[in-house]
Image 1: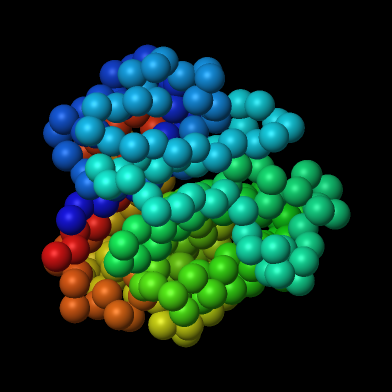
Image 2 (image 1 turned 120 degrees about the vertical axis):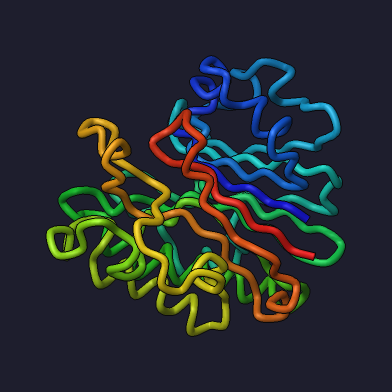
Length: 269
């Protein structure tokens, strides 16, 4: 089974530039998870919403149009789909007072249930250059997301993927010393990944390639950083420990363009 995750940085632009269809024709994923789609199904061509051989589901902001958004395409129809944190978790980690808007209603989460596992597609809030959203990330979003995955795991193994907007360790970005303490590489954000791993989830890329350097999934477009491979690994596939024996490979598809991120791939048996 092959899964692909990709932050498109705007699905309409991805389609217009010709980078959408090849995801299916070239890689033939069983499940495709997209982040930062910045569009509703109504804003997309019918052939993008209804890809032959796939079921699709979308989550998008109820207020801010053209912002955030995630989608899942799957060959098998999900048993159920949710775009919300469980009510009890949302009550415990109330994010409605965030000054930028409630991230729980920004189209950042999709949970699809299948026969043998859950797939969770996430676009984690950016902490902002001035770090003004760090308290939200550290105290609310990250704990709520992990609690949700652990709750799902009580029923079935969990696979979660997406743009977590953080490089976990120094090996995950090109310039760790210069980036220390900046958004995407603060101790608070990195602690969120530490807790995910402590809870038993496996960073699949590092499982296969624990020491691999210069392996990035995001590059700043303004500085043409991709040409020099000055990047960050901020896109991930994590799986429950119960799926460890099913892991076959995890890849970064760095040769695929169309966004400031590249797709990542997970193969399980």
